[in-house]
Amino acid sequence: MCMTTVEMNEKMEKRKNMQMQLKKMEDDIKALDMDIIEYLMDNLNDCLTTNSKGKEILQFIGDMCKATYSPQERETVDKEEVKKLLSDKDYQKVRKVSYYSVLRVS
View 1 (tube, helix red, strand yellow):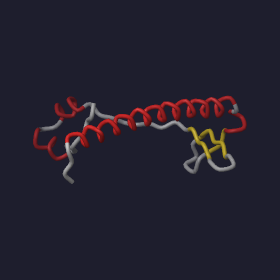
View 2 (tube, rainbow, N blue to C red; view 1 turned 90 degrees about the vertical axis):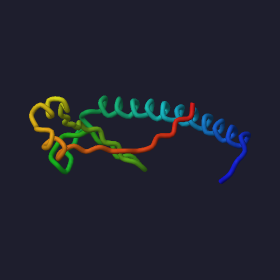
View 3 (tube, rainbow, N blue to C red; view 1 turned 45 degrees about the vertical axis):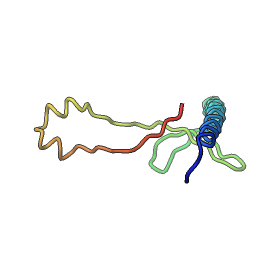
View 4 (tube, rainbow, N blue to C red; view 1 turned 60 degrees about the vertical axis):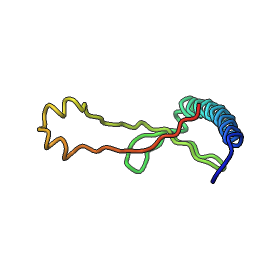
């Protein structure tokens, strides 16, 4: 697709406006999420249940949607400490690198 400089500027301006709208929507969604979490916490006795794995969660089943709030855990490792424990060859065996392109319009 070949476009003029004017068209390119218009597209970048349109993208910037849409990006600002998206940011506003994301902020609105975060505020709604906080309201939902607050409701679940305030109604602990009514919302407390057990999930399929036997863990306690908070859950509300509405007319059209269901909200669940549950703890999660994530484990990480210290890359530098792993390098100390493994030889360079062994480190290369377990190392995974992702490559991707990034477009930034500011």
